[in-house]
Length: 146
Image (cartoon, rainbow, N blue to C red):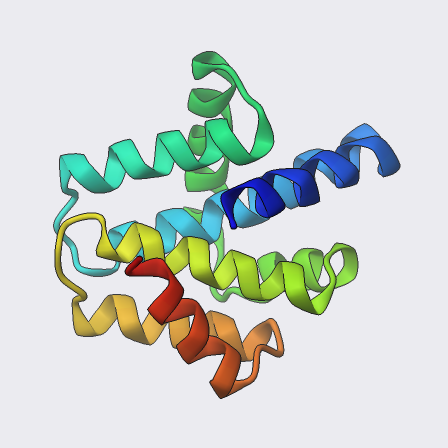
């Protein structure tokens, strides 16, 4: 599963110009950060999972991950909704890729060993914006626990 997600982003890197690459990465990073912040407790396990996820799936260095998360957090702080992020993902990702992104959100939410109701709410909201069906939403949640 992880190999497929990594391949998905590698294919995207080959096809898209730099500005759109950065926008997609920022959009995914911002949604991951929003899930991490949802329960208002910033756990070390969640931060580590965020870093590992971004490094692994976008093939980034520590410096690039730090820059990406700082940029995404700043944009997230100034945003009033998730539309700007979901729009970018919807424009550049297939249905299967969007489901995989929901699974990444679930993996981050599970990083501290429990799902807070606010984390569940954020992921549910994002899944709706990404047009992920309830069946696929639940399948991604189950897959994230394995």
